[in-house]
Amino acid sequence: MLDDQNNLKLNIISAICNMDVEGLKMYLPGDKIYFEMNKDTFINKMNELFDDLKSRGNSCFTSHPGQCISTMCRNTACKGLAFVSDFSKEHFSFVIEYQDGNLEGWTQCFDFSPNSYVLDESNDITIEVWNEEKYDFVADDDFLQTISDVKKAKTLLGDLSHLGIKRSSLLMWLDRYEKLFTESDFFYRQRCMYYKSFAEFGRLFFVLVDLGILIKNQELIVTIIDEMKYTKRKRHLKLFDENKELLSTLFCVDIYRDNGFINLSSEGNVYHFDHLDFKELFDYIELSYDFIYKYHH
Image (tube, rainbow, N blue to C red; front, side, top):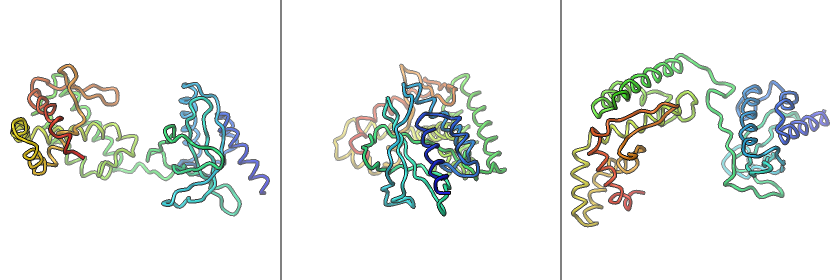
């Protein structure tokens, strides 16, 4: 039995090293869990990874045994392997889970130390596993309803974009959807970033929420930045401390003008804003950079 398990392990390692998807299909037990995914989902994920690496000139991996050196997870000291691509030297690692001598599955390791190889941390590959891809995910009614809500929100935003999104129309859109999404379990504390169905829309949504905050506080922003233009550092610091949350949003909002135009791209769609309606606000966003940078941490 032990020899069978060792042969199985060697065959799987060989298939990964050769970027051999068919070999993985043949040797991976179908009833085990790999990186929190079932076999079929894991195979598809590895196939995407192999294709991506091949497009950058790689043809195989070398494998390097070692162990997890994390002091914070249950896999500490567990043995595993690092796989390093031959051309770009990109790498990923996993630890191997056994129970009673039988292979139970693999877990991705982010704090792995090979025994006789030094990994380049800048070339680390994170195999992203969306919540929908996990073996125990269930698309319940709340999930399906949220997908429907996101679709409607994107459709309305696209309609507003045709003539250029104005400050008033963005506030209308936020009035309709901000509470709905911020109170959703899938968006609370930006959990949407762990869902393939919501991550891209989530990035767009939270930028628009920040922009809405700035629209609602435009008069105050103008007053503060105008005062900063004509006062000294001590006054700047006081103004920043008194309005820290607003000025931090002003400094960090992830939307910019490009040659006078304001657009946001998401999932292949480009949302256009009325640059004249937003001109004063963006003038002051850009003015704020020099004043706020030194105080923002």
